[in-house]
Image (cartoon, rainbow, N blue to C red):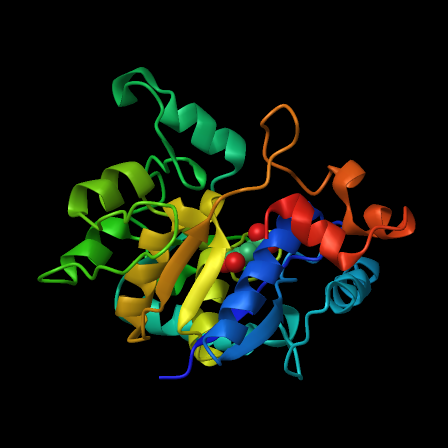
Length: 281
Ligand code: GLU
């Protein structure tokens, strides 16, 4: 089996040292395995994505000494595939439309009978206000949610996955999925575009990814991805969640940490090898 991995940045800001580490690690692992390294631009969030940042992704990666296959998959050009996946899950009876705003969810989740509001990988666990609604009632004003209890019931035995990185494997169990993850959004309300969990799963399969190498911050999303892969009949890659690059105070770097943008180090005369040294590669 050829080792195929990818780097999948969202062009919503400048790449920083954390991205450099992720991209270089994936690239090095692919080189070592005699495999392939692919790039994917995760630009479904049109309000936050910017072509200037996308151009800078290519520029920074090339400067780091990374090469990738073309054409690059841009999620904004692949929306039909996400809609087909949604249709499939909808026909399986696993989706429902949801018109709740964030405020509605906050209020319903903190109602006294609900106990303390629970947080999952995507924020507050959805209290289920729209769960009774039919998939066929979906309108432009609705988000789309996965009916987690039904998704879990779909399996006699829930799928599992292999992890080779720093993060422990999170077992998929009915209790974890229904109580600690809940009815996640698979298509957003405002833009009608696929949410991250759906597009990532569809595209990892479309690109034939065998090894997903990404930051530990995404490890809690992996059970969701593995579940969606099994529901959609897609293969499950091997997961490798790597350590995060932190600032001097121990906080993980965010897009707004422009102080650690690769572009800035470049402007200051750093070499790609300096960057490798900084991230411990
Ligand atoms: N687009 C995501 C990010 O920039 C990465 C998604 C993934 O690697 O699965 O954080």
